[in-house]
Amino acid sequence: MSTVGLVVNPTAGRGRGRYAGTETLVALRAAGHHVLDLSAPTLALAQESARTAVDGRGRPRLDALVVVGGDGMVHLGVNTVAATGVPLGVVAVGTGNDFAHALGLPTGRPRPCIDALLDACGRHDVHAVDAARVTAAHLPQPRWYAGVLSAGVDAAVNAHANASTWPRGRARYARSALREITRYRPYGYRITLGGVRPAQGGAPDEPISELAGVPLRAAPGPDGPELVWESPGALVAVANGPRIGGGIRIAPDAAIDDGLLDVVVAGPFTRLGAARIFPGMYSGRHLQDPGVGVLRARVVLLEPTAAGAPAPHAYADGEHLGPLPVRVEVVPGALGVLTPG
Image 1 (tube, rainbow, N blue to C red):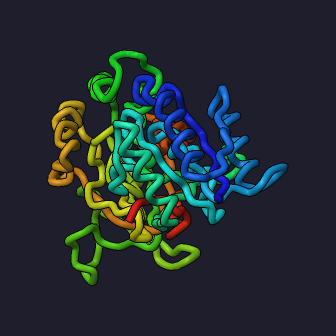
Image 2: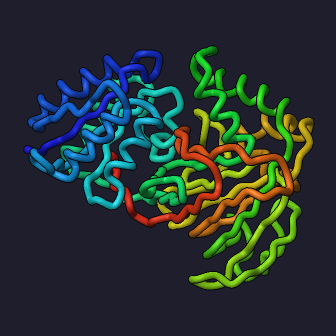
């Protein structure tokens, strides 16, 4: 018998999370697992309860942590179990479910999600994937994320969507995008990339001289040569996974187990230009625009400059991180996820 911690977001998926949480609890106990319900009135309290259980303080140490909800609950889970050796199970019944989609897990209806979880638990199937670690002066300790960090107009859209109550579901993100694009002015950035690789399809030995039409300059770094992109810009995404916002393919070729981050940037678009590329982001067509570029890197430092408007606060997995500068480093295999087969 294994000890499983369970954290439920009852409001996920327009209230679907409450029913799914109860059904997950019953199903895990029926399968012979000892289940600790670590849910709490707030996410902060649930996070602390889960961390205490993962550390084994005051109770048996968990064999797995299961979260029920959307990408916000995944973010809680990743920040609890990353680099601990405790695997994460996901019952993806939220609105977006971008991380579960990247893993090929069922999403939406509770029963298929629970069946996949029970299958993985029964066979102890754990898939090691990468996680990104964020450090910044304003963060008391490193933060982790599994999907995408946004720091451009994409982050401004995220902030507005989080603060909105209407419309519900994915349409809220699209409405927020229209609002923020009409207010957007190019932001000032300095982006320093270490351990750079060409994007998929690029020649591995071909020198990398520009990104999104902006020349790159070489600089020495603590772990080898680095490349620096400095320009006003519209979009900055540091992607471990391919999607944000419930299906927007911001970095369509990003893989969660390749040991690299896909860094997607857009130069100083006008508002009309930003509005023009946004619809194509749902299919990844924005990468065909010469003003948009992508590189792969192991380490990324995002800094604001005075060359444009103040950059928005960064968001990761849809959750608020805070102002730039932030440093992001991929940690290969830092997260084990229960996945069937």
